[in-house]
Image (cartoon, rainbow, N blue to C red):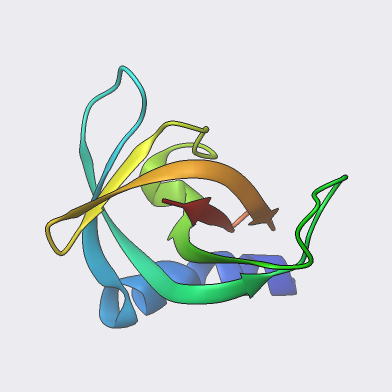
Length: 102
């Protein structure tokens, strides 16, 4: 059994035990319950040709296995009564995906 197998087996329990309950709705799709980790006021490095030296964002990390596939721009997460709209994918390791949301 390799490390990726161990990680895939452990992550659902980690998100369930330590994550926050949220609802994910893909554009034009059905709402799904999921667990997320959410970080506020994360300082981001610029990408591409942005004029700003830095930016602050809210980052949501979710399990790909819970939401079905990598979320797209415009998809929605609702957490603690607040709606967060996906702006871009920051990271995807095949298990979890980190998203910049507004």
